[in-house]
Image: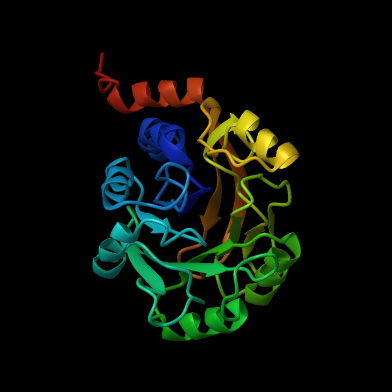
Length: 277
């Protein structure tokens, strides 16, 4: 089976390319499941119920979040009521949301989705390694395919998590830094690992925000509004091939879709079926 994890969706440009591309990517790459990190989907920070539904309608099957999860308080009702969206599992037990999601892939394989938050250069949170152990112990034994979105700043944190969970989960894929890394690999015991799958949004930017605004504040300390940029929009993520019987990953590849390619994918979805001669 094949699973795509889409990196941090940033604002309307990121949402637009997801809407254009995902269904075509499912068809083109024979994807069984699409997971997306959506913590920056609403104006660059947070997620709203309307945008959550928009992403699901675009073909996203499961949603992960990170440190901006509660920036839009209205998302709490979705976190409590919907089964395909997760909070970081190392948040406090009383924080709104589920520690893991169990979703059905298009091929009928059950997949567990987990989000964890790193601790280096991040807000204070509980131990992500202990949280991973606790959540894995709760999963039904028949669930073999397990994807972990490790939302963390430091690559050392992400490499440690990959090694710690090697052989126990199908993939540990990093988000949060908005910069794709070139270290995708299959670890010795069968876990796919990459420090960061990249951002889905405008790359003519500073991590998705307008360059002039970020530069002004950085140089002068004069506060500006870090508006979402609009140029060079790309969908970035990684596709992992998994043996559904063992849960072990067999391949991982980085994915980059530019705007022109996304528009072509729309045509793939809406093209009329071929007719026999």
